[in-house]
Image 1: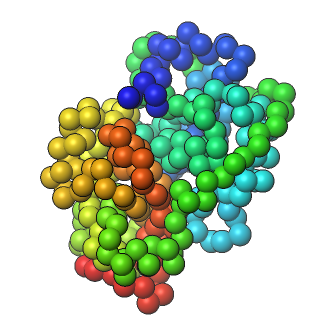
Image 2 (image 1 turned 30 degrees about the horizontal axis):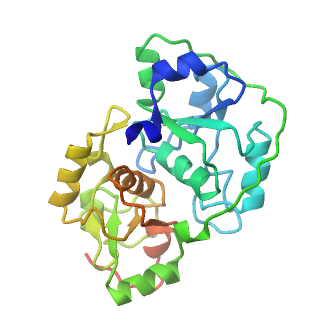
Length: 279
């Protein structure tokens, strides 16, 4: 199952010069420790990798971070990177699988069928002794990507409120436990503390180690311990829709194909907007 979603550094090194492969650094910083991912990319990246800026290739018509872009914005952006519907896209990140599942989710939501993640990210690549480079990368010839956006993959605020009121679908929050339990303030200013009523907490970093997901057995044990029904229809959420994709992908690896992501997540729900919360 993991081979359907990941490639190893050895595989990528062997295929790096293949004409149909585009490698993307999709790193984004956590709000608790922001740093300039693009600058880090310029200092060191996998040869010929391009930077996929998740806060720029996004819906900029609202003030929420890295919201899912329109089909037009996405198609224009990835086409300019030399990606079409037949391109094999390989995504990696600089920070322990924090942001690459979100990019994977964006690509799959836009209808890309050939997208995988580099297991272990750039750290695993370097640990194998493979070369890196610095500076800008000139994209290959522009291609045409025709997005077929699956709008049902992403839920909006009203849809999540309906789910809360109906109480039939489990909601899983990927934030750290102190934030979920209203024991620690939110890193984004102006947000309330707490969680969406009825939701369960599976902190995203419990699921990963050294830039890879833990074994299926470990994932099952973690979800079960947190009271999650692994096969039940689910909605994932987090602080801004980033690590919600980590939980979504972990459940996908366990065979659950009925998972949707709340794109606005706590950056939207936690505003002073009268929406119900639990401490």
